[in-house]
Length: 290
DNA sequence: CTGGGGACGGGGCCC
DNA sequence: GGGGCCCCGTCCCCA
Image (cartoon, rainbow, N blue to C red):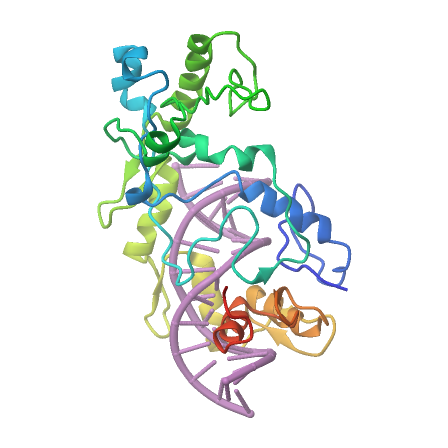
């Protein structure tokens, strides 16, 4: 029975019950589906979408308004590339397959959800090749009967005219991308001052361990570090006698009690508790990429 | 080489 | 707005 420990609780008790772990599969789908609404965009990958009906079809205000631009989210430092949002991650088989959603399917035409930096207008390769008209505000004007041409991607509200739809999109853009805050220590930018302040702490490291002098960005990180000095291990495994100082480590340990691990090889179906183990397994040649 | 533990980082959410 | 907490993840080390 697959167990899902990496489940985000929604409006429930904040203290996870690690003893009740067998009925969470549906929540995994929920998390991944939810996360699919956000996409990390590498600055070099972003192209301001081609204006629909040609650039001249837009008002100068609409074309030049910096509000129509967004926030640049730098790529993660992870050694692993960012996970694709369709739930497929190379050879990984998730506990339950993630089905596509209309929102996810629309992502290629959701430039404003991706919140990119301001860029001059230019036609994307896709536009040039396929002649797919896409507005700078995320309006798809494709004429397929299956694809709505008058629906706002954000609120799914239908509009009779493209101009009214453009206005609606701009409202979302103003709300979402009105301003952003840049880190003075690096090139990261954030949509809120609070997020920026939180990030700056990773540079200033204001929490210093009195025992060894090691500095941390947040108090609870320091608390966790202090446990390495005191030996305190408040997170106990309900299945064995082991205890851990770090909740994440307990979570990883709980995987060892599961017969079916979180990550599965799509070739031999062997499961692994960690993605790194699956990666090593694949690199060893079990699942040659074809 | 594999599997697991220890330590830690960072973004997001909630109070 | 700030702090605490959660989730997710990485890196390193060791048996």
